[in-house]
Image (cartoon, rainbow, N blue to C red):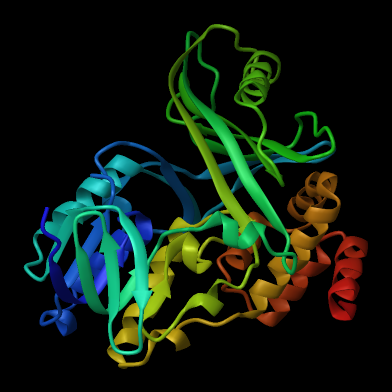
Length: 385
C-alpha cells in the first residue's frame, strides 16, 4: 500500500468522550470553519462499551442522550447511612453507544471534519509541524490533540501516588421488585473492607433492573472471580435477592493520580481526556469535567495561544493529592474518610467541591468535615518532602 501524506490544521487522536466533544465543538463554531480537522480512532465506536455518569443542576447540554436520571442518592457506611435528596442536582447516566452515535452523526455533518478508522502508532513533534503516523498513512498537522493514555508513564515514577478505580458490574434483572428506582446507590461501604477501600455502586433502571457494581480504590485489580463473588453476595445478603438474570457485564479501570500530565504538552501537541489529566483524580469522574475542559480549550484556541500554556494546576489539585497520599499509604481509611464527610456535609456541597466550583470558605467547610488527623499528617509530609 502506498504511504500518503495529508496535512490538516488540527488532528484529534481518539474518538472517546474528549475527542468527540472537541471535534463537535470545533465543527459547531464558525470561528473554525476554515480549519481542516481529522479525527482518528482504531475503533468504529459502534458498541456500548461503557456508561458515563455525572451530577448536574437542572437541564444540561447532554440531556437528549441521558437515558436515566436519579433525584436521590444513597450513601451507606459502617456506622452512618442515609438517603439524600440531591436537588437542585440530579444524577445522570449516558450509554456509550448513544453518545457515540449522536456525536459521530454531528461530526459527519461538518464539511471540514473527517473521521478515519486508523490506529496511531507514533507522533513526531517538531517546532513547525507535527506528524501523526498510522499503519496506513503519515498525516501532518499544525496542532494535535492526543487522548492516548499511557499507563507506563504514571506507574514508573515515584513522585505522585498512583491508585486505580477498578470495578466489574452486572446488569441484572430480578424476578421480584428489589431496587428503589429513583435512588442511585452512590457508595455503599457496608461490604467487608478487607484492608482496602471497597464499595458497591447501584444504578436502578426499574424495580427489577439495575447495574450493580463492585468498586475499589486501590493499587492493583482483583481477579474477575473476586468482584463477581462480592456482587452475588451483595445481591443475596444485602438486597435479599437470589433469583436474578445477568443481562450484561461491565468492566473498567480508571487511573487515580495527581501525576503532572501538563508537562508533556507542547505548543503543537496537547493531551486531552484522561491522558491530559482531565479525570478527577480523587473520584475517577471524567465525563462532566471533559465538557468543561473542552469549552476552555476552544476559548484558548480562539486567542491564538500555543497549546503549552493551556491549563494549569489549581487548588483542587493539591486537595486531591492529599487524599491520594492518604489512600496510597493507608488504603483502608477510605471508608472512614468518605463516611465522615457524608455524615458532616450535605451532598450538594460535596458535589460542588468535586466539580471544583467552591469558594475558599466552602473549601474550608469541606476540609473541616473530613477527618482532620489524616489530612494534617498528609499536608505536613508533603511540605517536608
